[in-house]
Length: 151
Image (cartoon, rainbow, N blue to C red):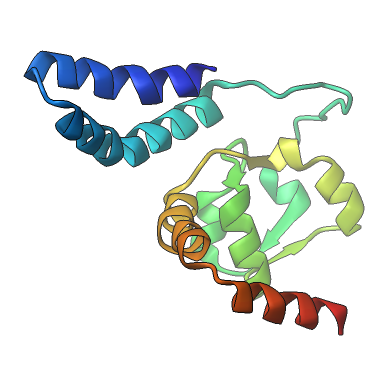
């Protein structure tokens, strides 16, 4: 509800201040939608607490759970300086970080060593991959994907 309020009220307020026509109001709404959406997602990912505390965290340092193969990464993410989960998955698939111990156990304590903030890479993916794919998606792409998933 808060997101919808921001996406509607800010362009309306700008259009009211500029005494804009309905066409200009629509252009203002379109041009401000992604910056408003990105800032809302970023701030809510920073400010919103965990939904539940079913898993009691032992508050161990990051290096207890993860083994960084690059010295710069191990210096950057140590102690209480948690790694963004987006960065972790990129490093993991590149082979630059490994789990210390059982993967499932380490991932159960992921709130102890990772943060779930929106990063610039997530915004880039959304803007340059996800949105164009949704806009330009055709029936033939859907058929090809559904055939590939069945094989």
